[in-house]
Amino acid sequence: MNTTAQRITDLLETHPVWDGHNDLPWAAREQVAYDLDRLDIGGDVASTHTDLPRLRRGGVGAQFWSVYVDAKWAGQKAVTATLEQVDFVRTMTSRYAGELALAVSAADVRAARESGRIASLMGAEGGHSIDSSLGALRMLHALGVRYLTLTHNDNVPWADSATDEPVLGGLSPFGREVVREMNRIGMVVDISHVSADTMRHALETSVAPVMFSHSSARAVCDHPRNVPDDVLAMLADNGGVCMVTFVPKFISPAVREWDLEAAEAAAAEDVHWADHTAYSAFIERYTQARPQPHATIDDVVAHVEHVREVAGVEHIGLGGDYDGVGQLPTGLEDVAGYPRLLEALAERGWSDEDLGRLTWSNALRVLEGVEAVSREVSATRGPSNARIEDTDVAGDS
Image (cartoon, rainbow, N blue to C red; front, side, top):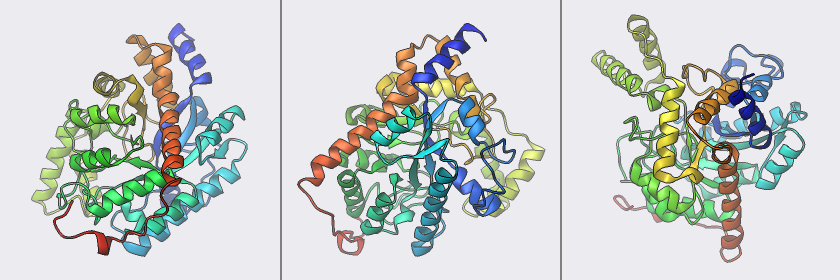
């Protein structure tokens, strides 16, 4: 083992990777209907980016498991499916209790680390999972969900998404109340996937640190899923964290250009990305004729260093989005790849202290900060009874 590789191995013993977003629960739903006898992550699994042996090789010490459900599912169907995702994560952590520990607090994360297990937290990916109900939000929190991504790829009635046509210009009055209630109960406000104006409104409204669970820098790759520099500056003032993602079309300008050309070709055949099945089939055909460029570790490094430059080293983390995408950068093909990224950063002069912030300390600080705000706010304010039908008037934000 070379000197840099040994240095990273040693670093990960004390500052393991805390990853902001992994879609293994959805992969388990789609591939095997949650049957862990058929998808035994205790050994090597060929059909996913994630299993326990590779998490160990990757130096992962804490994982936010996404309890995502399809954004096209509305109302009660989305809430029910989210509950099924939560049930799977709880079942998974129970089945592999020697390796995984369900965590709902910073203290739980520390305890898991001390016991040699991977802390397993949950994040709900999209406001459709609460069906515009603060009661549903509180019940997800009671079941252990510790962040809510305000939108997924589509708008919700109270927040604009990055990849949908803007309707509200950010957050509606009810959307701001969702943020305030999340502050009160101690749920992290996740502003990946949301429009830039929604990002700004959330940062203006939240009195607790927020997070981007899996987003990169728009100045490096001009994709609406990425974070503009002015928002990164606001994030520093807020005390939050941007967990840089590995999704090729978000990090590589070449892949982004290819993706735009593919979307234009699809539209010419009247195939639109909102029809996921038809669009995926088109992209598969298009890729055979014109292969997608490859993203690399260097692309990820560029985003990490840009976020450090604009927001500061105290406000960066990692959110790979494993099992949520089909392709990943060369060298980061699965969850075992994190040490390679850290080695690349070390070779560019990153200190162990700053690498430790990136992998572990920043995420821990954000969760502790959210918990501290919750204790303070909940001491003076009870549960919100706001309802979207009473709060929002068309055109208000």
